[in-house]
Image 1 (cartoon, rainbow, N blue to C red):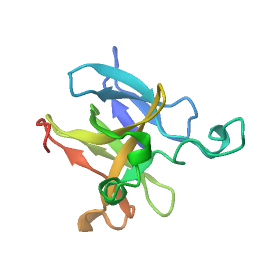
Image 2 (image 1 turned 180 degrees about the horizontal axis):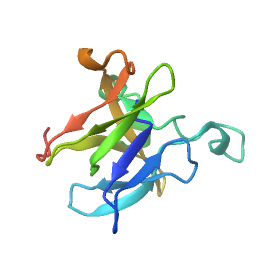
Image 3 (image 1 turned 120 degrees about the horizontal axis):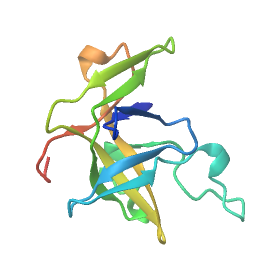
Image 4 (image 1 turned 90 degrees about the horizontal axis):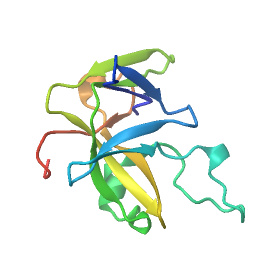
Length: 147
């Protein structure tokens, strides 16, 4: 389900892991700008002052739920996450890193509540060749806006 993302750093690649509460991902917006946004929401950081949940818990958005409108309340915007690779954990807790090719991006979804924004990794069903690793997989897209 993409528990880690490797991005190009200024001096070397940096690895960002979802469980870290301060995790932020770079997001390539449609206008070409890159902004860093908090990656999803964790249970312990997600309650509002009134005790109600504000953000969808986790760091992922199933493509089917996006298409069915379940994210509409968060004014979802499709974005690309410029990454060198991503990490999945298998059922035994072992990490597996997967490299992205030039021109490939992880698809993200920017969700908004008022002025606050967060990014979620869009997931699809796992390709059959990786079924032994995890049951959800990040959606990989190309250079064009409609991919």
